[in-house]
Amino acid sequence: MTDKMLAAYNNSETDGQLREDLTTEPVVLLFHRLASSARKPSGVEWKELFAMMGRRTAPVIRLLHDSGDGLTFNEQCVCLLVSLHFTPSEMGTLTGVSPQGISNMRSRLMWKLFRAGGGARDFDARLQTLK
View 1 (tube, rainbow, N blue to C red):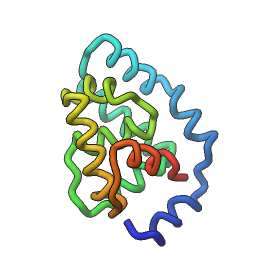
View 2: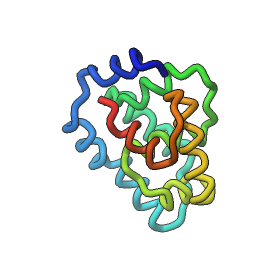
View 3: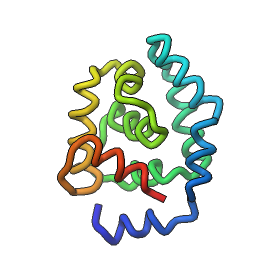
View 4: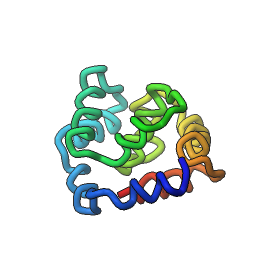
């Protein structure tokens, strides 16, 4: 993603309050419960999470939509979960990927989505600051 495209995302209407509101949505709370009980979400539950994010015009949904890099389903899920502040352990449980695999995936996503180097935490910070 070019700096110009990133600036467009950062200048969108979404603000910090919207991000806070997303973390208290029932489907997000359900995902936390699933992770804490070591259960993977069903396809219907994943669809509900994606739909909720889309209805709220979450910036990560726009980013995923505009990405021409053909992200896998797990990569898309990890992006949503990172934007909702899930832990790597929770992400691993929900996607069936090891926490180390989640960290590796986040590092690769830094390049795929932002065309920048960096590690997993850099990716999280960059994704979570999209407005």
